[in-house]
Structures are given as C-alpha cells and as structure tokens.
Image (cartoon, rainbow, N blue to C red; front, side):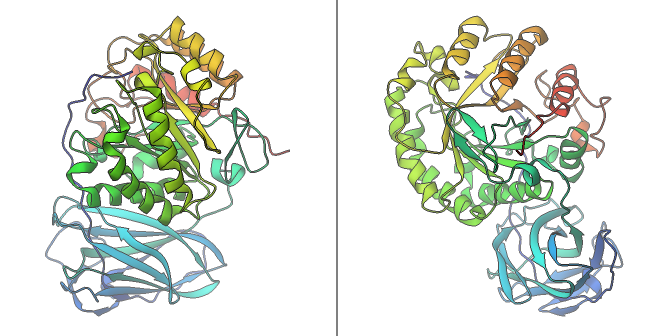
Length: 474
C-alpha cells in the first residue's frame, strides 16, 4: 500500500563488547543505583578519562582481547527482575558481542552494543535479569578478539510489578479471529512503529522510549527493520544487534515488541527467504522465553500472488516455531498488506486459501486519505472471518505525507476498537513528512513528552493511544 520510497538520514549502528570490572557498592533502596566502572577491579583494561562525556571520574578502556570482562558486585533489597543498563561509548565501526552472566550463570548471550559514532558519545544498552536478595555478581565478557567499548557505568533498577501492558496480559495467543491475553480474553493493543532504523535510530533512545511507555501509555513498539534500502542486507550482524537491543528496551518498559521484517522492494518475500530464516532463527532463539515478543515475517508483500505469500509463510512459521513454540506470528497480505485490494484482489483470496498454521494473524495497512470505502469495507468483512492486526496506518496519503484526514481515520479506529483489532501507527520519528509524529529536529534533543513537540498527526494519535483497552482478566 506504500510503494513510494522513503529518503532520509543515514544512521550507523554497530556492536561493541565489554570487559571485566568489579565494583562494590551498597544500597537497599528501590531507586536505581549506578555503579561506576572506574571504581572496579579491571581485568585486561585500564581506567582512563581522555574522552569527555563520562559520569564519575572516568571509564574503563578494554584491552583488545576476547577474554576482557567486567564483573560488577551489586546489592539489591529483594529478589526479582532487575534492569541492567550499561552506559558506554564506542567510536568504532566494528560489530562486537558480549556475554552477560549473573552469579556465574549466563543470562544473555552475545548482547549487542551499537556504535555511538564517537568515543565522546555515550549510549545505554539495557537488558533484564533475575537477581537474588543481597549481593550479586554481574559479569560481562567480550567474545571477539577486538575487545569492547569504553565502559562508563552499570545502573541497576527494579522491574516492578506495575500494571504495564505485558504485566497484565502476559503471553498472547490467537483465539479465533482475536488476539487474546494470558486469561483467554480478546484485547486490543495500540502503539507506534519506528521509522526505518537505518535512518532514524536517533529517535529511538531512552527519553523517547520512556515517553512512549509512560506519557503515551503505549502497549506495543513496532521495530521496523528494512531489509533493503540500506537496511539488513547491508550488514546483517549490525542490524540484528540493533533489533536485539530495541526488544530489550521495550521489555524493560513493559511494552510488547513487534519485530517487523520490513520487506518492500522487491515485493515478493520469497526473494529474502534465506535472509529471513537466518534473522528470525536468531531473534526467536534469544527471545523465546520472553512473553512480549511478536514476529512479523513480511511487511508489505506486493506484485506477488497470494499463493506465493502463503508458500513463504508456511516455510517461515516453522522456523520460528522451532525456537519459540508459543510466539504469535504476523503475515502481511498481498497488495501492500491491503488484503489484496491494491493489487486487484480481495480478502476472498486469503479466506479461500488460508495459511496452514496456527497462532498467527494476517496484517492490514491503511492510509486514511488514500484508502477509503473499498479498503474499509474489505477490512470490516475480513475481520469477521480471519484474525487481523493493523501493523501500519497513517492519517495521510499512502506516501505518509500530505494532509490529514482525521475524520476517516477515526472511522477506521472506531471499527478497530469495535472488533478488538490491534494497531501501530506510522511513525515515531521527526521525518519531514506529516506522518512522522515529531516536529523536525526533535530527535536531536531529549524532550519527547507532551504535545509541544508533536505535529498534528502526532497529537491526534497520542491522544488515541492514551485511551487504552481495559484489558480484561476475568
């Protein structure tokens, strides 16, 4: 439904690894506690302060060896899930993984650390782990010969049992034509899609994700990984690691993480079948124990028959199931996810020849200023026959630009609410087009809350995300 290409800023992202540091600090409060790396006992590295931007009095510069590692000794008041936020700088363009162990047991394998662009630019990578009450040892170990980045600090924070969307709904599953929560009740998820992460990764950072989770009250983050157009195929390792990181960030905030394999041109998903198998095998294997992961294996198939998409899906779904037996899978429909309308077909193509699998949903996209009665009516009919999730929509034309048709957009959203169809809006960036929610230049700063930073479409969709589903539990 959106054959127009997106030209945008290029944003690099690469991996870096960590090295061994031992820090001792005591705290029994529930507030976040930061452990400075320079206060630690270092193995195969040195404390330095020649690159500005660090907290405390310095950072750890890791030796270029695979055995460099960091072991922080931390204290927490009670047993439970905690977020581990590692602040670092990486001025290289070389991908490097690290392992994270807690009390001698590996909890994260090959955690990615995207490049920050300069040794004076710092970012944070966050993961979660179960800690015991009292003292814990958190060790990060480089696994490649190039070593790791400059390690600035580790911040520990409790992952509370707050009423986040994931805490309430847990593991999702498809029941009939609906998406249901852990109690078997149909729910509607509402949230935002990133722009292409090869262009607008600067819009996905701590402040913006905090705003999305707590100011917008978003249920779900769609992680838009373009396959072509400067995306995954140019550096699979780099982009896979970026996706790993975004999944962890969504998890930390209690949001569902929708991993979007954003194939667009070529429109036949079979062109990228081998790449998709490689990517989703790793994603599903690492995140299979999470309850908030959703896999979208084809964004907008186009100029390809429904039979071709069905064949692709029936090869891809078993790949994911081999690693994650209960994760929900989404599959794009023909005609740019229009149920075939934009390619001259209809929902009957799907209903008469459904995908042979379970626990999956078909996807639909609309741009309200372009896709009106014919598309709306097809969605309304199809939603009574097959499970559907709207993984992308805009209030503008199919280019993601132009004037907003809020009246027809509301007509769509009323239908989606009535039929409990979840949705994510395009897009959470400051791109110049009217469909990007933030005003141009917003992502260079750290202010993302409220409406002053938003374009009209952003104000409109934020208001509708904030009025969330009731999420029934009984």
